[in-house]
Length: 85
Image (cartoon, rainbow, N blue to C red; front, side):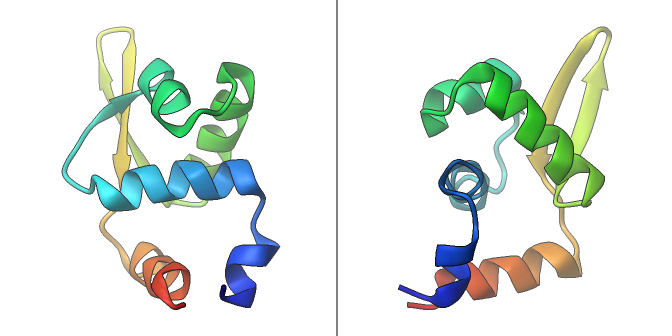
């Protein structure tokens, strides 16, 4: 296991892996929590942090917020680091 994986919080890693494995998919907060098996409150906090770091993008539809993985250099570097064994 790469040292980078050991440095990241397990719950953050689960959320990141969910998005990296489903790059084209849009997720509602409840679905992220359910699929990543991370409590909803923790998911809310971690997703907010990932949005502020420009790793996730937010699509607002009315009052609904939907999240997707960003398409930028940060995400590409992060994916490279996480995928190394």
